[in-house]
Image 1 (cartoon, rainbow, N blue to C red):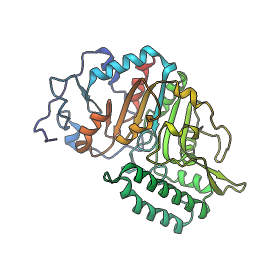
Image 2: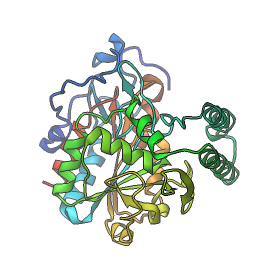
Image 3: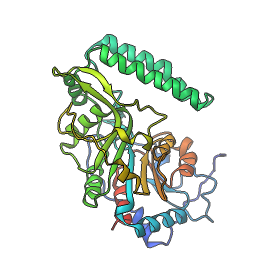
Amino acid sequence: MRPMTSPPFLSPSPSRLLRRLFSRAPRRRNPTTPPPIAPHLGRRVSLLLPASMSSSSSSTRTPESVVADADALARKVAAIRAAGAAKLQVIADFDGTLTRYWYDGSRGQSSHGLLRQGNEEFNAKREALFEHYHPIEINPDIPLPEKAILMEEWWGKTHALLIEGGLTQEAIKKSVADAAIAFRDGVVELFELLEARDIPVLVFSAGLADIIEEVFRQKLHRSFKNIKIVSNRMVFDEEGRLVEFKGKTIHVLNKNEHSLDMAAPVHNSLGDPNGCTDDYSLVKKRTNVLLLGDHIGDLGMSDGLNYENRIAAGFLNTNIEKSLKDYSEAFDIVYLNDAPMWGVAELVSDLCP
């Protein structure tokens, strides 16, 4: 995209519904406030917009969100609203989507990156695996079938190191307690809203379910009956030491509804083997989807679901000028600058009043 010298500010759609959708809720104080954005990114006329977002198009924009096709979004909202809450499910990525990108002015940690085994040798070995396989993960020239095999290999080696290195439940608890990780403002309110409307939430992650659950327990201090985690699960012995992983391996290329048999609720304690779900067939009957992600690849989380309508909300946390065009073409609405979750909560309120 050729940079615009003076991108136009696009007036909001006259639709009352869309004005409600993109209204901004007041921010709350949060110790994880990101560093100030550059002044030119804070002004309405400064963001580089997709070519389709011209003054003649039906588009809306606020300093925190971009909608490339407001008419298409309005049609999806109307269809999902008409079908009712009983047909809706939410599919969400965890790292960088439910959690903040910035933490105390620095890049926050991921649920996988925060883990410390208590054994520096094995921490270093896992880091070496990352240095080797991560370039393969992001290389667009490697065919997906070949890449999937290599990702399975990477995850398998990493899991083996966690077992060999003697990972314990106490190490997980300490890692989370010491971690630079926090949920976005508005996440609790969103979860409460969805729980009140009996809308299931599937949190997909290629990381480790036990760590994600510990983040829920330590950072939210409560659980929600409608939330299930779809991720890699550990099995511990009576002494709290990791002995194996349960079920199939979930990696970045199979993190979707084909892995629903791995779904389980957030447990009350680390290592609790109970509560695995066998009702995922009911989720498949909910054919309207609100998908939340921070990478374009997260759109694949709905693969395997024969949905009727899908609203995809993307969080573009950094490199906004470089990535905005691609994100606004891929997602129905894009939230910018590590935005809080208030906009999504407002959207849910309109979908299921």
